[in-house]
Image (cartoon, rainbow, N blue to C red):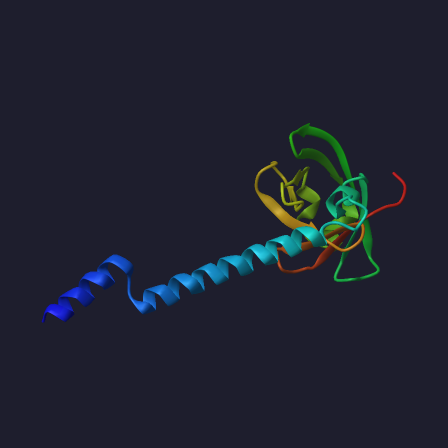
Length: 154
């Protein structure tokens, strides 16, 4: 009985073998998450020290397309009205690409580089993530898939 009590006391103080395995597994999982985060940040840089987000943000005129179609419309980011929030002008024919998008009035740039279009500056109608190259791709809503590409001249 005395050995059992010592074993219980040791397990109480130091945990069981399964708890030790669980702690190690959590640590390995955290290292994996950090590694993926670092790779994600590195992918946002093109090798010359300038981030893709910064490059995409250089333009104020964009071409909006849906599902890779030939149909496109013009989008223009206007003056900044507050930190990360700018006025937005959407061409009337954009409603053919995504009904309701013609109501948006604001471009909100998030800290992670994503961009949200909204009618009121708060509630997004469509949200874009940074894409390869010079623009963004929508991820919410899931359909239609929209591409927002910077135009070469403003």
